[in-house]
Length: 170
Image 1 (cartoon, rainbow, N blue to C red):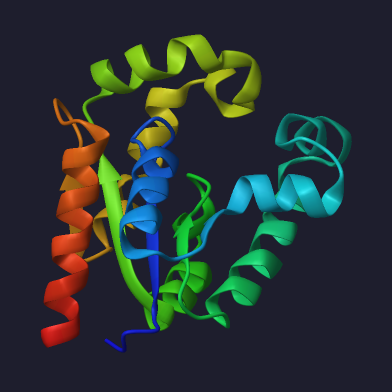
Image 2 (cartoon, helix red, strand yellow):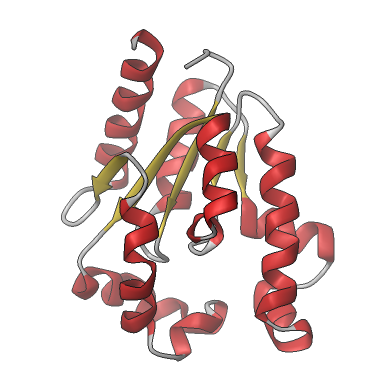
């Protein structure tokens, strides 16, 4: 891994990607980018609005373009949307751009974390446990894994930085 490679944090909604990513970026003095927030900024609509107005397929198309754009950048800490790296092509692009770390947590912890956030998460209104199970093989295909259950965001950030440092010396 090159020192200027990206650090990409992915996983299901509620695993702590954005919170840990911001801490990692601050500690490593790198810019932080949340792909969902960047899509909202560029499209001028919230993710729920994009889903409602244009559908999930249109959102995934926008997401694929964002993935390829970000993979071409260097030196970022990137938090992906929960479904971005479920797409095998997106996963391969990001794996080639730097260190990719997949965060996970138990379903019970995810539910606790997400309860306050239902309006902002269109996929939470449906069978989110089924969605988690459907995505599990894609998440498990990512070599670096951290279970965030029972851990503070600071502890998760410390683990990500340790993985990063190990990847530089590998």
